[in-house]
Amino acid sequence: MSADVQTPPTGLRWQWIDWPGFDPDTLYALLKLRSDIFVVEQNCAYPDMDGLDPQCRHLVGRDGNGAVQAGLRLVPPGVKHAAPALGRLVVAPSLRGTGLGRALMRAGLEGCQRWYPGQRVFLSGQQHLEDFYRTLGFETVSAPYLEDGIPHVDMLRPA
Image (tube, rainbow, N blue to C red; front, side):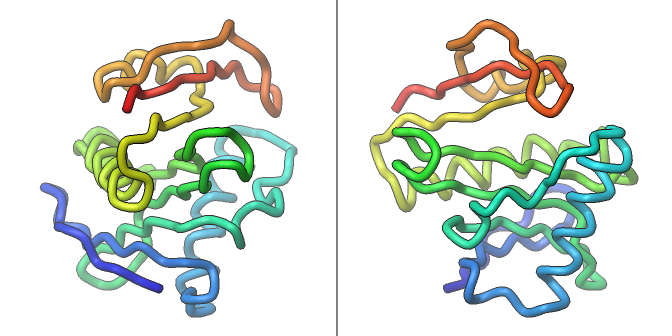
């Protein structure tokens, strides 16, 4: 299943894709972007692909040329946490500071509301982004902890 959603101010086109709906080029582009950021840029020698992707819906943001510039995954409730969870949020370095991260999160939250209405939303966020996630309605529910060598906090957004 695939579904397009509104265009954010950055001019990207959003598309929700279930695992079987990925075409090889889009899947490769998304996983490469994630690897470029989560493994290379963050100098994190831990596997990005954790076996959960096939169970998730993925939000992909493409520019006018069709290049993948942003993405996230929506983990269904009961797969990793009791609540639906947003994770693997990634924005191309060239588009940081444009509001794309906020647009990505808003589109992700719209997806949570669409498929899991009335439920809280979980995320494990890098601690340095805690204030950003708070502006989107998330509340910190854990002490900081290390995940793959990077400080994180668990956060919940009330239903």
